[in-house]
Length: 383
Ligand code: CAA
Image (cartoon, rainbow, N blue to C red; front, top):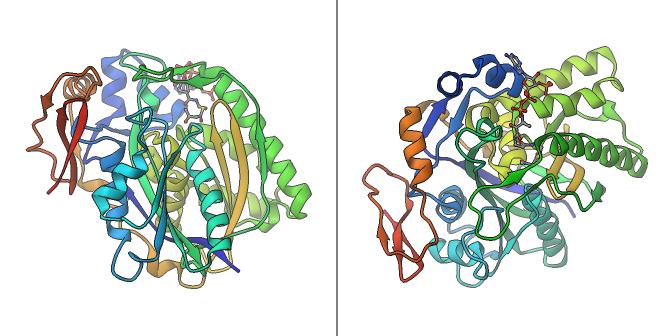
């Protein structure tokens, strides 16, 4: 039985900062951010959006009368959770009106959404008529004026996992690895991640090689079998480095093809920044929408990495009608905000300090919004 991604959608805020402007204010050569890191814009998440609202905003259009009653499992992957006990899955199921479902939250840094997909795949293989809503949503926060700042961003990707999927059929085998590494972590009560940037880059690339080699050994496939290679993209330059690891195994024509497809796959990530759990899947959407060369039957390789650290290389095959199922992402409609306004929004995110607060949400036209906190309970609204 074929199982995979039947529907997919992406949500981010309608505001961004220009990376050249951020570089100028930080007294950094803009080419460090534009070329060295490989980012041109960075999504700015306003206080009226958190992972729950972004996840609901991404998932909303994927649910209709055709599949509403078939969805029986909601798996929300995030590393920017809002509660130590109650799951974001329970919050989002409530907002979306999904009642007869199991709802959970899953965590392993940026790897979480891939773990969720694997769990969903197992669930559908045991219950072929079930559909699973998988969400990966995060806000990447390292702190103003830190080395990690240009690799921030945020957003959500939502997917419906089913049998006979309309977009991507997942292959059976994958290569995976876990090592207990301190490259990136966020202690309880910290709203910013702590990171050893250089170690994280090294482990990311080392795990890519380990999982890619394991995948090849298990499947007998080689780079020649792939139309495109996708990567978790905390910033696009790291994906370029990941791609280089396989290019020396490719013929000249395959090398050109993989580089061309990667250009399409990094386009949206270059304009949004890191969304942790959703980054690999935003890159998949970017490939689907920006490549002119994809055909049904093409095999796509995917490298998922979550600090701490877990890596997995897996693959899928594009299905017959994948082109009819693509979301329509328009990042051009977003509004550029000043660095001052970005800093202001960054500092005024909702804090879990117990205070009742009511947020001004007049500028946020999203369907699902966070409007404040009362008695230490987040208050959400649908508009
Ligand atoms: N023009 C062009 N390029 C320039 C330049 C200039 N003027 N100045 C510097 N550069 C280049 C550097 O040569 C370097 O390129 P290489 O990596 O190819 O050598 C690049 O710009 C970055 O420069 P630095 O290494 O000096 O940058 P930095 O020390 O300020 O930090 C960072 C970079 C480590 C990525 C930092 O932003 C960071 O810690 N980010 C958060 C951690 C992260 O994203 N890690 C990724 C792996 S972990 C993961 O994937 C999980 C996750 O999502 C967090």
